[in-house]
Amino acid sequence: MLTKTSGSQQNLKLSFPDDAAWRQSITSVLVGNYALRPGMDYVIANGTILFTAAWDPQLIKIIATGYKDAVVN
Image (cartoon, rainbow, N blue to C red):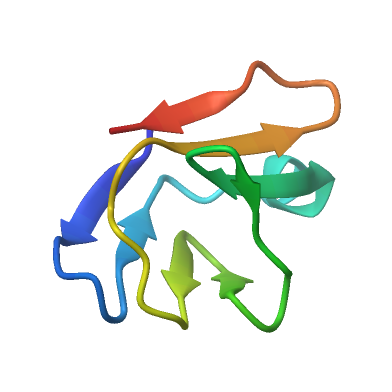
């Protein structure tokens, strides 16, 4: 389960119970229909995804191979 821990456009942070297998399987992070660039637009760490650019915190989708898509809105 993903949880927004910051709601502002700058430095939006998602928190989740850490699962290294899921985290390493993440292939795409989308804000709306826009695919973000790993390492430039967001950083994944143990239990968090930190968005490094200002994004309108609309629908966020995390796609990980072998897992159901995780969606936060």
